[in-house]
Length: 297
Image 1: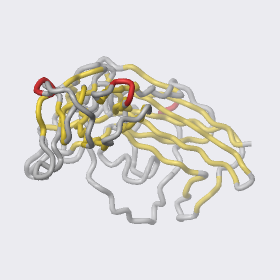
Image 2: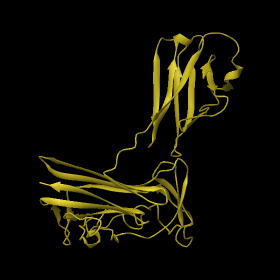
Image 3: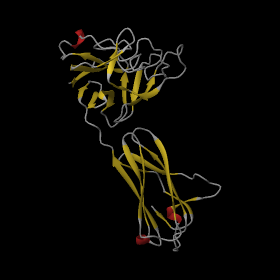
Image 4: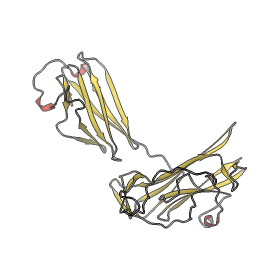
Protein backbone atom coordinates (compact mmCIF):
# COMPACT_ATOMS: atom_id res chain seq x y z
CA UNK A 1 0.00 0.00 0.00
CA UNK A 2 1.29 3.49 -0.83
CA UNK A 3 -0.30 6.80 0.17
CA UNK A 4 0.43 10.17 -1.44
CA UNK A 5 -2.42 12.49 -0.44
CA UNK A 6 -4.15 13.57 2.73
CA UNK A 7 -7.14 11.66 4.04
CA UNK A 8 -7.68 7.91 3.88
CA UNK A 9 -6.15 5.70 1.21
CA UNK A 10 -7.61 2.30 0.50
CA UNK A 11 -6.71 -1.10 -0.82
CA UNK A 12 -8.01 -1.78 -4.33
CA UNK A 13 -9.41 -5.06 -2.96
CA UNK A 14 -9.23 -7.00 0.32
CA UNK A 15 -5.92 -8.78 0.86
CA UNK A 16 -5.69 -12.16 2.61
CA UNK A 17 -2.30 -13.21 3.95
CA UNK A 18 -1.62 -16.23 6.19
CA UNK A 19 -5.31 -16.51 7.01
CA UNK A 20 -5.81 -12.83 7.96
CA UNK A 21 -7.91 -10.62 5.67
CA UNK A 22 -7.11 -6.90 5.51
CA UNK A 23 -9.79 -4.53 4.22
CA UNK A 24 -9.99 -0.75 4.16
CA UNK A 25 -12.44 1.04 6.42
CA UNK A 26 -13.45 4.71 6.54
CA UNK A 27 -14.14 5.39 10.21
CA UNK A 28 -15.10 9.07 9.72
CA UNK A 29 -16.50 9.60 6.22
CA UNK A 30 -17.61 13.11 7.12
CA UNK A 31 -13.98 14.13 7.68
CA UNK A 32 -11.82 11.75 5.66
CA UNK A 33 -12.31 10.30 2.23
CA UNK A 34 -11.29 7.00 0.73
CA UNK A 35 -9.94 6.73 -2.79
CA UNK A 36 -8.29 3.76 -4.54
CA UNK A 37 -4.50 3.73 -4.48
CA UNK A 38 -4.52 3.45 -8.28
CA UNK A 39 -5.94 7.01 -8.45
CA UNK A 40 -2.86 8.47 -6.76
CA UNK A 41 -1.06 9.75 -9.86
CA UNK A 42 0.37 13.15 -9.08
CA UNK A 43 3.70 13.27 -7.28
CA UNK A 44 3.93 15.34 -4.15
CA UNK A 45 4.69 15.30 -0.46
CA UNK A 46 3.19 12.90 2.04
CA UNK A 47 0.53 14.77 3.98
CA UNK A 48 -1.12 13.89 7.25
CA UNK A 49 -3.88 11.33 7.19
CA UNK A 50 -5.16 8.07 8.64
CA UNK A 51 -4.49 4.43 7.79
CA UNK A 52 -7.56 2.46 8.87
CA UNK A 53 -8.04 -1.25 8.25
CA UNK A 54 -10.46 -3.99 9.28
CA UNK A 55 -8.78 -7.31 10.11
CA UNK A 56 -10.65 -10.63 9.90
CA UNK A 57 -8.77 -13.35 11.77
CA UNK A 58 -8.81 -17.13 11.12
CA UNK A 59 -11.09 -17.64 14.15
CA UNK A 60 -13.65 -15.28 12.47
CA UNK A 61 -12.87 -12.50 14.94
CA UNK A 62 -13.08 -8.99 13.44
CA UNK A 63 -11.09 -6.03 14.74
CA UNK A 64 -10.27 -2.55 13.45
CA UNK A 65 -6.82 -1.01 13.54
CA UNK A 66 -5.76 2.50 12.54
CA UNK A 67 -2.89 4.95 12.84
CA UNK A 68 -2.21 8.51 11.74
CA UNK A 69 0.78 9.58 9.65
CA UNK A 70 2.43 12.97 9.69
CA UNK A 71 2.90 15.62 7.02
CA UNK A 72 6.68 15.48 7.43
CA UNK A 73 8.28 12.19 6.35
CA UNK A 74 10.41 10.57 9.04
CA UNK A 75 13.19 7.98 8.75
CA UNK A 76 11.25 5.73 11.08
CA UNK A 77 9.50 2.42 11.00
CA UNK A 78 6.51 2.12 13.31
CA UNK A 79 4.58 -1.10 13.92
CA UNK A 80 0.92 -1.37 14.91
CA UNK A 81 -0.41 -4.73 16.05
CA UNK A 82 -3.67 -6.38 17.03
CA UNK A 83 -4.04 -9.90 18.37
CA UNK A 84 -6.75 -12.52 18.22
CA UNK A 85 -6.82 -15.90 19.91
CA UNK A 86 -4.75 -17.39 17.10
CA UNK A 87 -2.84 -14.65 15.32
CA UNK A 88 -1.17 -11.28 15.74
CA UNK A 89 -1.48 -8.96 12.76
CA UNK A 90 -1.13 -5.32 11.85
CA UNK A 91 1.04 -3.10 9.69
CA UNK A 92 4.35 -1.26 9.57
CA UNK A 93 4.65 2.34 8.37
CA UNK A 94 7.75 3.38 6.43
CA UNK A 95 8.48 7.07 5.99
CA UNK A 96 11.44 8.89 4.48
CA UNK A 97 12.98 5.97 2.61
CA UNK A 98 9.93 5.73 0.34
CA UNK A 99 9.11 9.46 -0.06
CA UNK A 100 7.13 10.98 -1.68
CA UNK A 101 5.05 7.93 -0.81
CA UNK A 102 4.23 6.41 2.53
CA UNK A 103 4.56 2.64 2.39
CA UNK A 104 2.37 0.40 4.54
CA UNK A 105 3.60 -3.18 4.99
CA UNK A 106 1.01 -5.69 6.19
CA UNK A 107 2.24 -7.97 8.97
CA UNK A 108 1.04 -11.35 10.24
CA UNK A 109 2.61 -13.32 13.06
CA UNK A 110 1.12 -16.83 13.51
CA UNK A 111 0.01 -17.77 16.98
CA UNK A 112 1.87 -20.74 18.43
CA UNK A 113 -0.51 -23.40 19.68
CA UNK A 114 0.54 -24.36 23.23
CA UNK A 115 1.53 -27.97 23.81
CA UNK A 116 -1.10 -29.92 25.79
CA UNK A 117 -0.07 -32.01 28.78
CA UNK A 118 -2.20 -34.81 27.34
CA UNK A 119 -4.44 -35.13 24.31
CA UNK A 120 -6.69 -37.47 22.38
CA UNK A 121 -7.53 -37.39 18.68
CA UNK A 122 -11.03 -38.32 17.59
CA UNK A 123 -12.54 -39.52 14.34
CA UNK A 124 -14.41 -36.22 13.91
CA UNK A 125 -11.13 -34.26 13.48
CA UNK A 126 -11.40 -32.73 16.95
CA UNK A 127 -8.49 -32.98 19.36
CA UNK A 128 -9.29 -33.14 23.05
CA UNK A 129 -6.57 -31.11 24.77
CA UNK A 130 -5.83 -31.24 28.48
CA UNK A 131 -3.53 -28.56 29.91
CA UNK A 132 -2.16 -28.90 33.45
CA UNK A 133 0.06 -26.50 35.41
CA UNK A 134 0.88 -26.75 39.09
CA UNK A 135 2.98 -24.62 41.41
CA UNK A 136 4.12 -24.58 45.03
CA UNK A 137 5.05 -21.50 47.03
CA UNK A 138 5.19 -20.26 50.60
CA UNK A 139 1.47 -19.51 50.35
CA UNK A 140 0.64 -23.09 49.34
CA UNK A 141 -0.05 -25.34 46.37
CA UNK A 142 -2.17 -24.46 43.33
CA UNK A 143 -3.04 -26.26 40.12
CA UNK A 144 -4.63 -24.96 36.91
CA UNK A 145 -6.57 -27.26 34.60
CA UNK A 146 -8.06 -26.39 31.23
CA UNK A 147 -9.67 -28.64 28.64
CA UNK A 148 -10.86 -27.89 25.13
CA UNK A 149 -11.92 -29.55 21.90
CA UNK A 150 -9.71 -28.13 19.14
CA UNK A 151 -10.65 -28.34 15.46
CA UNK A 152 -7.50 -29.62 13.74
CA UNK A 153 -8.77 -28.77 10.25
CA UNK A 154 -7.84 -25.59 8.37
CA UNK A 155 -11.51 -25.43 7.37
CA UNK A 156 -14.80 -25.34 9.23
CA UNK A 157 -15.70 -28.65 10.88
CA UNK A 158 -19.33 -29.73 11.16
CA UNK A 159 -19.66 -32.17 14.07
CA UNK A 160 -22.88 -33.95 15.07
CA UNK A 161 -23.75 -33.65 18.76
CA UNK A 162 -23.24 -36.67 20.99
CA UNK A 163 -23.61 -37.72 24.62
CA UNK A 164 -21.03 -40.49 24.99
CA UNK A 165 -19.12 -39.42 28.10
CA UNK A 166 -16.57 -41.89 29.50
CA UNK A 167 -17.49 -40.74 33.01
CA UNK A 168 -20.75 -39.05 33.90
CA UNK A 169 -19.91 -35.65 35.44
CA UNK A 170 -22.18 -34.24 38.11
CA UNK A 171 -21.52 -30.49 37.98
CA UNK A 172 -19.48 -30.52 41.20
CA UNK A 173 -16.34 -32.25 39.99
CA UNK A 174 -15.17 -29.66 37.45
CA UNK A 175 -15.33 -25.90 37.05
CA UNK A 176 -18.36 -23.96 38.34
CA UNK A 177 -20.89 -23.93 35.49
CA UNK A 178 -18.45 -25.98 33.45
CA UNK A 179 -20.03 -29.44 33.35
CA UNK A 180 -23.75 -28.67 33.19
CA UNK A 181 -24.57 -29.72 29.64
CA UNK A 182 -21.24 -28.57 28.20
CA UNK A 183 -19.39 -30.65 25.61
CA UNK A 184 -16.06 -30.85 27.47
CA UNK A 185 -15.33 -31.35 31.14
CA UNK A 186 -12.77 -32.52 33.68
CA UNK A 187 -12.55 -34.15 37.09
CA UNK A 188 -9.84 -34.81 39.70
CA UNK A 189 -9.34 -37.92 41.81
CA UNK A 190 -6.88 -38.64 44.59
CA UNK A 191 -4.57 -41.47 43.53
CA UNK A 192 -2.96 -42.65 40.31
CA UNK A 193 -5.51 -43.99 37.84
CA UNK A 194 -5.04 -45.30 34.31
CA UNK A 195 -7.41 -45.60 31.34
CA UNK A 196 -8.25 -49.13 32.47
CA UNK A 197 -9.61 -48.14 35.89
CA UNK A 198 -10.37 -44.40 35.85
CA UNK A 199 -14.11 -45.06 35.56
CA UNK A 200 -13.97 -46.48 39.11
CA UNK A 201 -12.37 -43.34 40.58
CA UNK A 202 -14.12 -41.25 43.22
CA UNK A 203 -13.86 -37.67 41.96
CA UNK A 204 -13.46 -34.72 44.28
CA UNK A 205 -15.92 -31.85 44.51
CA UNK A 206 -14.16 -28.79 43.08
CA UNK A 207 -17.38 -26.75 43.33
CA UNK A 208 -18.94 -25.79 46.64
CA UNK A 209 -21.98 -28.10 46.96
CA UNK A 210 -23.78 -25.55 49.16
CA UNK A 211 -23.27 -22.57 46.86
CA UNK A 212 -25.65 -21.35 44.16
CA UNK A 213 -24.00 -20.10 40.97
CA UNK A 214 -25.53 -17.74 38.44
CA UNK A 215 -24.21 -19.55 35.37
CA UNK A 216 -24.25 -18.07 31.86
CA UNK A 217 -25.66 -19.99 28.94
CA UNK A 218 -23.18 -22.48 27.48
CA UNK A 219 -22.33 -23.76 24.02
CA UNK A 220 -24.39 -26.94 24.40
CA UNK A 221 -27.47 -25.17 25.78
CA UNK A 222 -30.92 -26.11 24.39
CA UNK A 223 -29.80 -29.52 23.09
CA UNK A 224 -28.26 -28.58 19.72
CA UNK A 225 -28.01 -31.26 17.07
CA UNK A 226 -24.52 -30.21 16.00
CA UNK A 227 -21.62 -27.78 16.18
CA UNK A 228 -19.79 -25.90 13.45
CA UNK A 229 -16.20 -25.41 14.60
CA UNK A 230 -14.08 -22.50 13.40
CA UNK A 231 -10.92 -23.59 11.50
CA UNK A 232 -8.03 -24.46 13.85
CA UNK A 233 -9.89 -23.28 16.94
CA UNK A 234 -12.05 -24.40 19.85
CA UNK A 235 -14.65 -21.76 18.94
CA UNK A 236 -17.91 -23.09 17.51
CA UNK A 237 -21.50 -22.24 16.62
CA UNK A 238 -24.18 -24.64 17.79
CA UNK A 239 -27.23 -25.32 15.62
CA UNK A 240 -30.48 -27.28 15.61
CA UNK A 241 -31.47 -26.21 19.15
CA UNK A 242 -34.79 -27.06 20.77
CA UNK A 243 -37.06 -24.06 19.95
CA UNK A 244 -39.14 -24.75 23.07
CA UNK A 245 -36.05 -24.05 25.19
CA UNK A 246 -34.48 -21.14 23.31
CA UNK A 247 -35.17 -19.38 20.03
CA UNK A 248 -31.50 -19.13 19.08
CA UNK A 249 -28.44 -21.32 19.51
CA UNK A 250 -25.29 -20.35 21.35
CA UNK A 251 -21.83 -19.46 20.06
CA UNK A 252 -18.77 -19.96 22.22
CA UNK A 253 -15.71 -22.00 23.02
CA UNK A 254 -15.67 -25.75 23.57
CA UNK A 255 -13.55 -25.28 26.67
CA UNK A 256 -13.57 -25.22 30.45
CA UNK A 257 -11.00 -24.69 33.19
CA UNK A 258 -10.28 -23.81 36.78
CA UNK A 259 -7.41 -22.90 39.13
CA UNK A 260 -7.72 -24.41 42.61
CA UNK A 261 -5.72 -25.52 45.64
CA UNK A 262 -8.09 -28.02 47.19
CA UNK A 263 -11.63 -29.36 47.14
CA UNK A 264 -14.94 -29.13 49.00
CA UNK A 265 -16.20 -31.84 51.30
CA UNK A 266 -19.92 -32.61 51.42
CA UNK A 267 -20.29 -30.38 54.45
CA UNK A 268 -19.29 -27.37 52.38
CA UNK A 269 -15.84 -27.06 53.98
CA UNK A 270 -12.86 -26.32 51.77
CA UNK A 271 -9.96 -28.75 52.20
CA UNK A 272 -6.42 -28.16 50.94
CA UNK A 273 -4.95 -31.04 48.98
CA UNK A 274 -3.17 -33.49 51.29
CA UNK A 275 0.12 -34.93 50.11
CA UNK A 276 -0.07 -37.48 47.38
CA UNK A 277 -0.62 -38.08 43.68
CA UNK A 278 -3.74 -36.93 41.87
CA UNK A 279 -5.25 -37.89 38.53
CA UNK A 280 -6.91 -35.33 36.22
CA UNK A 281 -9.40 -36.65 33.69
CA UNK A 282 -10.34 -34.53 30.68
CA UNK A 283 -13.17 -35.74 28.46
CA UNK A 284 -15.74 -34.69 25.90
CA UNK A 285 -19.24 -35.66 24.80
CA UNK A 286 -17.87 -37.83 21.96
CA UNK A 287 -16.22 -40.31 24.33
CA UNK A 288 -12.69 -38.98 24.05
CA UNK A 289 -10.58 -38.78 27.21
CA UNK A 290 -7.09 -37.86 28.36
CA UNK A 291 -5.28 -38.24 31.70
CA UNK A 292 -2.64 -36.13 33.43
CA UNK A 293 -1.14 -36.17 36.94
CA UNK A 294 0.13 -33.82 39.62
CA UNK A 295 1.78 -34.45 42.99
CA UNK A 296 1.43 -32.51 46.22
CA UNK A 297 4.49 -32.92 48.43
